[in-house]
Length: 403
Image (cartoon, rainbow, N blue to C red; front, side):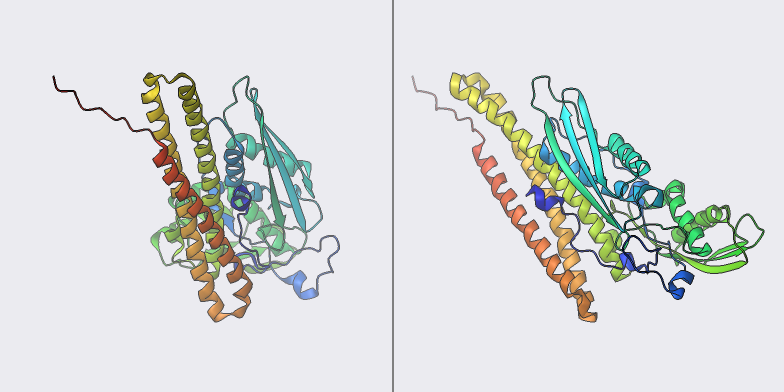
């Protein structure tokens, strides 16, 4: 089950979030055409989850389920590290492997990978050290390990590539700066902002853009966000050998936003938002599975103690630990139900998109498979919950004897 939970994305397409990407050729790729060299790119979406990290107390002691879930939950932050071209090598794809070990001394994250620069490793190391901090194990406990892989492809994932043209370089600088503009996104910590479109004017000899104008967003909150971003972009350093006028389209996702928050997004963008949300529900399911495993181990230890001693004074402890087991199993079921909701919403959306464009057929098949796997895991969890409820001891009282 953990293997399925770790698969965060159903399928990736070449047009990430509807953004048309044109980048400098990586190793083994053909040279760009003149049209591609002139096109303004480097405007990939930004996941607001990196601005609002979710502080979570991981179940203790750590086990494989807990670690896999924790590593999966920081996927937005790890992928944000790889947006920066200074964090990637020249290849079009980057693979990051993290091996996390927890023992009595604490937690260690060993990072390796392909096409990863020292700066990229340092960025990911900071993410893991900051957000994946399980409690150290007992002195006599066996170390726990978990390995997780993050894959990044410039064709599928948000990324910036410098050196294409002046407009693209400025756009790339803006995109890299967005993670430091979190104050602008305070109103959207649990939702997704509207797509914002601006027109940028850069003139030779001027240190900053001459003009940055945002089109109306259609909402007060969206216009307030546009105003904040306008002030940030207007202060960005700008250089050109002549004069540049080009549009900049700001697209935002939020991995931590609830499913209903994406209802008003354009359909194709909503698909990617749901995929990101699925990552977080899968992470929550893995952590809940790990918590239930801990509760089962604790209850089994008390059962074995009672079996050996037949000490009736252990009844209250048996009852308490079994209730904790039931509670943890219930949370596991609830987490999988949340994942099922995301999968069902995604499938319905993909089927609507497929009705308009047959190219969505492979995505529909993958979405159906993802939903079937989640429902299989949910059914197993519900059966486990019923078994846990049935295993709890029940105190019985013999009727008083008549004198």
